[in-house]
Image (cartoon, rainbow, N blue to C red; front, side, top):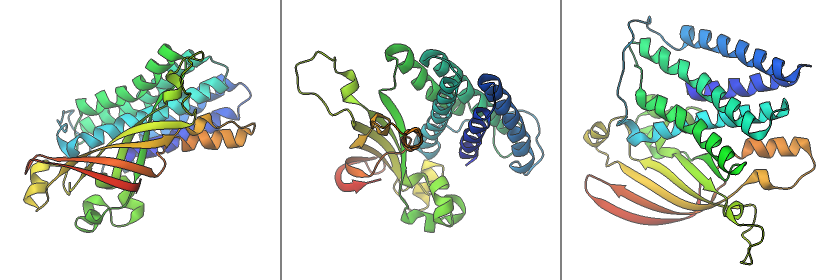
Length: 294
């Protein structure tokens, strides 16, 4: 949830920077001020117990690593919005990508440091690696291709599991879409048309049509795998393949519509999907077809 707060705050600070006469200076000052204020606010409001000695915590096994996908996704989206803001300020794609990636890492790292001083949490190396992975996905593509061809996306559907442990997975839809990992799917949405050379004589792939692969989990009613089993559930990993759309490739002359499509492109559209379900206890593999999956 704190990652989402930072994502929303970063979007607000980007807008703040845009209304300044000197765009770049205004952007940096605006982001810095909101960043410092948010860190201070989180340190006072989020951590209920007094901060103590710095310590680490290995949470790499929790939630079957889906939370790490969430870290990478959030850091990527912050970097992506940062890149757009720096482009607006006059930077070229590669410069904007590097500055945007720096923003993504900068906005996420203090959360992990504060966690390290909290007796309720701990500094997680796995979280830091995931936070670096998201911006790296953006920068690598901009340096290699000058554009984004593989886009991290997110989707959510409510699950029955939240009713079993509402204190952990959410008491209502407004909470469960943040807390219930069983309903979240993280995607890598690839645009095949962007990999085709302009002079190829083969059939052209539609520019808007993507192919997405996703990862999710089910039957995890505790962060720990063994505890979920002890509570009567059989956790599974889910892998998906599904068509998607790259909304940023929709042609339009409207700046407003272009901005809305840019923001909406962080979401995977509902579409048919093939699901591959794998469980360890008992060992089982199953394939399901969803007419529509989100």
